[in-house]
Length: 348
Image (cartoon, rainbow, N blue to C red; front, side):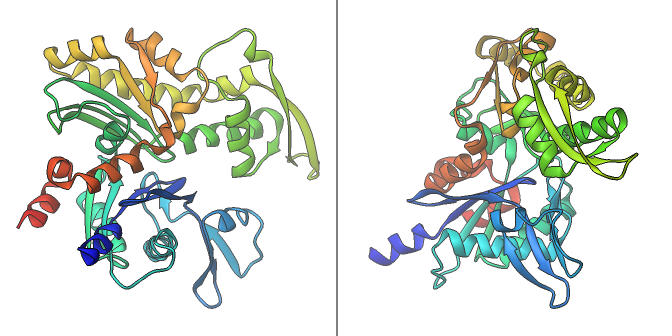
């Protein structure tokens, strides 16, 4: 019995996100939440730092060190770095104990190709005995507390760093889903492009993200639109550092295009939803998860455009990893939400 408890405690759920990776250990809950960044020593080809320490190096490394994000738009862009990152996080999440390789449940975007799914599975197998994949919107819905096992329609919109996942779920299955590779990173990129075009100011990735968090918004507000913040960057014309003041209303205008892509994905999914399930969604509303759900006014924007009440999940950043964790804790009941090939293999 002791050995069985030890073995189960090793099972791990991973929200392998473009911006952040979160780890859930069976029996312990969420044990790690760090940026999906790896710093590589180019001379030796080995990782120098992973996670928060590596993120501090973004844009600040010498020529022989490169700080990279192994995932782009929700999929692996650098396989070796992603494998090293997953191994590191597994070891850290398990406090360095490595006697028994864990079983992994990894949340991935629903729109990824078969090749991309294999890349995630192979990267995970570098530090695990078996790897199961679950679509992020399904995991997010489970983590948000939606009744995915019941015969009612639930709509989840998971706005992550690299992808936005929209899905209608019922009876542990995905009825309609859509994945667009526009999400939090594109909102930050739009802010950076606006500053460069309008103010001739070049800012780094971290600065653009800070602007989004502090004064970014998705829906007009006469009061908040007048809020401003000082932004430091490199002035293109003079070639010197400069500080300017940016208004929240201008930042909102800068983000209009990627926000419209997200809203249109929600609309297209609603248009394809069967009538009975659509009626359930009108009654129950739309649930938002992921870091993008924290953008000020995004519930108002989606409600305004669709006419359906929109809510933000409790702890939206944790929905996917909590969903992966619940699948681990109740594998028999929720195992059907896994990738079909994975579920059949685990059942045999």
